[in-house]
Length: 399
Image (cartoon, rainbow, N blue to C red; front, side, top):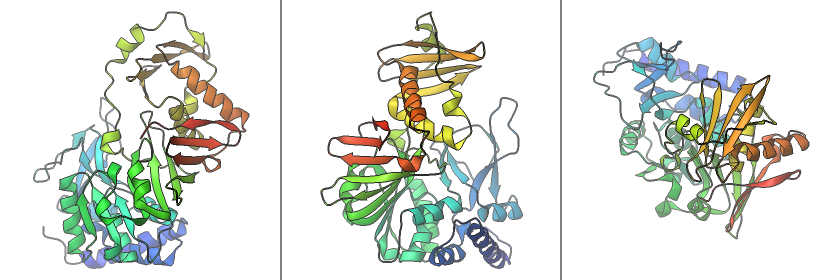
């Protein structure tokens, strides 16, 4: 690939500008992490990626535009040093970069996470010199490079479930002089050969904390991961592992979402109309609007996670104005239809899905609408529970 002669000069300037902006935003407060951001050439880790176009297509699908140095050097380099997520793979398949084309729709399955979040994750995990670290989800290798720059390659292990992703990341890392331990492995099982670790940080999300990670962390070690589920509710938690192998920690604030670990992704559920057809004819008035968990607000983001803990096997989709809840595990379903300024609910099956969510919303309102940081996750032999002083405990799915 032929690059303009001034690429290195351009990239140093853009790296410094990015670091300055992240520091101004309050993300990059630690001088050691700032030094790492200024040192690691992110463009080497993202030679090719997709960005969303400004407008959707006629069918409402996202239009994804390929971006490479050959197609548009300026746009490529600016995006490489912008604070945005760069999509590198869709639907588990590598794009054909020999002849890149505009894509319509598709589910991103690998990306280079936005730099502010990468830095925030390392900082939130309280990673510092002398720590041995396991990173789950190497992706492009950029965050791995930051950890190597800060800690030294010998203390960094990074695993990735997708062999093609890891091959590309390895080549970029080695090309920049970083030599962490890399392996193709499923994050659900951690990485036994290099355990135990002082810090475990996951760049994918899990439905519950994988037990292997607790055993692979040293007593007093910390695990930072994102919890997710089939309602696409997310919460981040920083757990501290005790001598007896149990762990607990508070949820962290903010709205962060990560792609699911592939074995934890939601199953296909079929046609919502088929599910709705079997529901009882007589509806009841909903006590809460579905917008409580679907609105684009921080509170709704947090509430969706709490709702998901109440109905961990449910999925939600909207067809027209009707909101469908579908549970492939128990065969339960519910629909919410706007009616006379409120919502009408029909529910069927062994689990009353919306009723369960309403109970959580009631408890949340009664407790004074507490934020994520007031919830603690307890992980022990018998399960995993989210606890709050004024609310009933919420179990997470069996890991």
